[in-house]
Image (cartoon, rainbow, N blue to C red; front, side):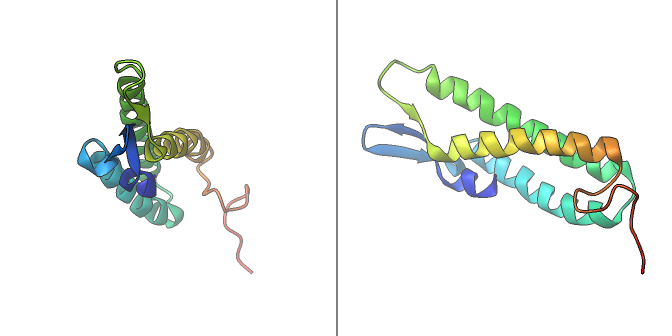
Length: 119
């Protein structure tokens, strides 16, 4: 998602607009918050961090889908959706699904279902 924020979000002829020229800045910040939350949430049994990560993914999905609709709904043939927007939308949508499982299970994605095991 962070990488997608830097890539083109829209193209018109030979010109392109990077995500960082608009809403991509917000998804970039959300992506940074997700990365921090994912590391903190691995050791923190609190659901708060996990819910914040879910909220960040949901917000990024909303921003990307709204921008997708706006770019795709512009005057026919004058602009197209860029690869960065598609990447941001796909990663954030998948992130929502993974985060829902993470929040519901109370277990980190790389942790066994029975919780942490000590040897």
